[in-house]
Image (cartoon, rainbow, N blue to C red; front, side):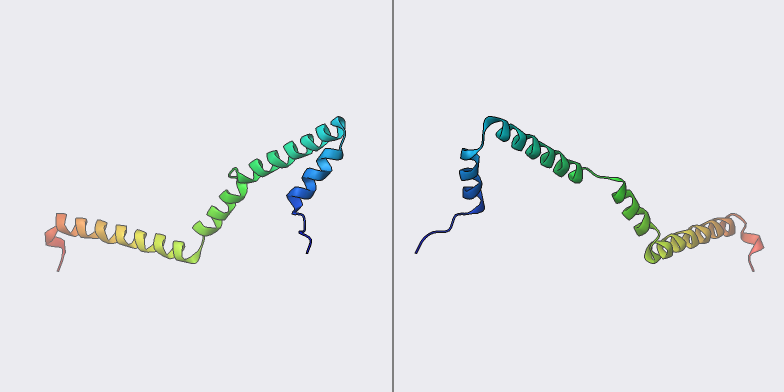
Length: 88
């Protein structure tokens, strides 16, 4: 039973038959592919958009509201402690 060539092996065989100028064109193409891969790996504005969506999620709105309520309660407690005669 004959062994099948892997895609890498097939590419290697094809490279052997290319001219120097064709190899250079292929290397230029590979360089473009690599630069595109790097640009995808760099954080983009899309991630900022995701963070904005998450920040506006209902759970986060509830957490901010609870935090504000807690801050108001603490201020009221401090005021009540500072003016003990005003409380019934």
